[in-house]
Length: 116
Image (cartoon, rainbow, N blue to C red):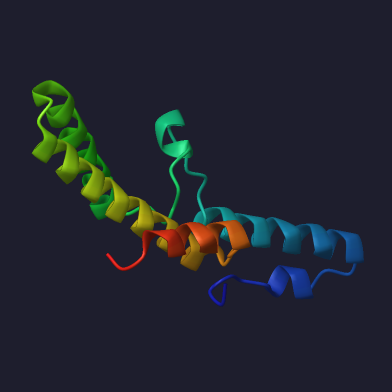
C-alpha cells in the first residue's frame, strides 16, 4: 500500500473523482493481496480444525472396523471399540477447544469416557 502512487488523488479538485480513484486503487491492492480461491465441493465441507493426523486416525479406525467385521474376532472388536472411544474423545475435546462451546451435554459426554 505504501508503494501506491497517490499523487493523482491529492491533485484532484473534484471530491467524487478523487474518491473514485482512491477506491479503484484500494480495490486493486485488495484483489492482488487476497485473490479469489475456488474450493472443490469435496474440500468445501472440510472443517479447519481437522488435521491430517486426525484424518489418518479416522482412516485407521475404519480399517479396524472392517477387519473386525471381516474376521468376527472378539479381540479385533475390542481393539476397534477402544480406538473408536479414544478418537471420539479427542475429536470432541478438540472441537470444544476450537469452538469454545461447552454445553452441559458435551461436558457430560466427555466425562462419561473417564480416564483413558
